[in-house]
Amino acid sequence: MVDVEQIYNDYKEHADFLTVYVREAHPADEWQMKSNVKDDVCYAQPKSLEQRVAIARDFTTRFKYPLPFGIDDMSNLADAAYSAWPERLYIIDETGRIAYRGGMGPFNYKPAEVRDWLASRYGVVKHETAPAPASAQPTTAPAAAAEPKK
Amino acid sequence: MKRFFKWAACALAVLAVAAFVMLSFMAGSPKDVYGMVRYALPHIHRGNLKVGSDAPDVRLVALDGENRFHIRERTGARPLVIVFGSFT
Image (cartoon, rainbow over all chains, first blue to last red; front, side):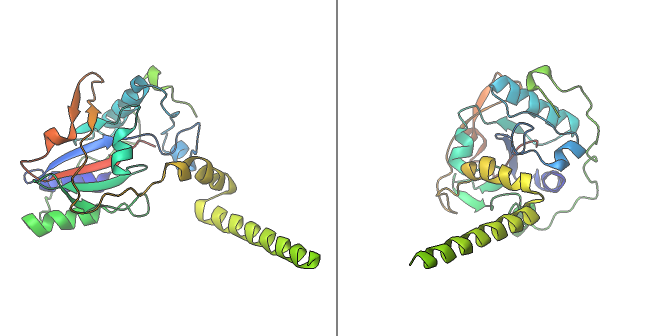
């Protein structure tokens, strides 16, 4: 996410940004990775919107995530419409059409391609000030509704 | 003929084991292969969106858990970069 935050900081004067939180990729009750345990990112797959919202809030709080944020509801319509899971990048142009469609993450998730698209329009922008480093420790206790577990 | 099937079954078994070992190596562990097949494959879909397609409009939930807004409300004035993802 650091790459995306840097792109946001560099190009937010030219483009709008939106993060859309979709169903978990590696929840504790499904395909949990060792890295989730190492990074203390252990959540069960949300069964309700309240749980999904609680995890989204944990994420934005813990990483002081600056991008505008929306959450796919439990019908997963955004995921279905954009083939979003587990992660994917898009750019929609001013006419409402897809201008860039990234590949499926994690292997084809390439923020550099978004940066290139923006640079081709607005020139290379690279602000000196990097976004605040992501904290390794939660700043708040995980919300009870999220039922985090290891 | 019976012998052919016997050899074919052996070859398939060897291929299956080789594929499992290779996937275990790529994914990290045998448990990850299970996770990939059980939880990832059912959710992977390429979809039909292409550059030039109309961007689908979807209603999203705001971080407060109460308000709703549409992706279309955020488009029009400037390009909109959308980052889809989750915490884990």
